[in-house]
Length: 86
Ligand code: FES
Image: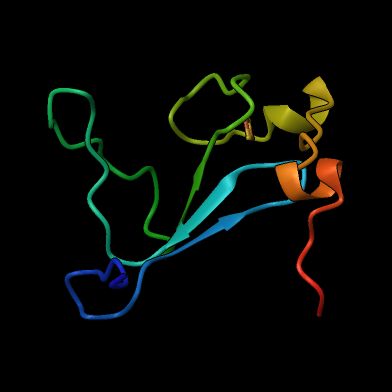
């Protein structure tokens, strides 16, 4: 499997933040369902994408997950006890 890489050649990193957004680092294009570019809202190198559904400015996170009390669902491995041994 190959890494997804940005146009600058650096791997794009997507972090599932604990009880929060997806943090996307890298030179990515964000587009809607028709392929139209969604402009970034700032010049920061990281994009925070909402995964709780409560943001007023989707697809971006606006911090509403905190007031909504969004909590990560348990991951499958955690709920089944199927974590690989270290
Ligand atoms: S993840 Fe932050 S508002 Fe939804």
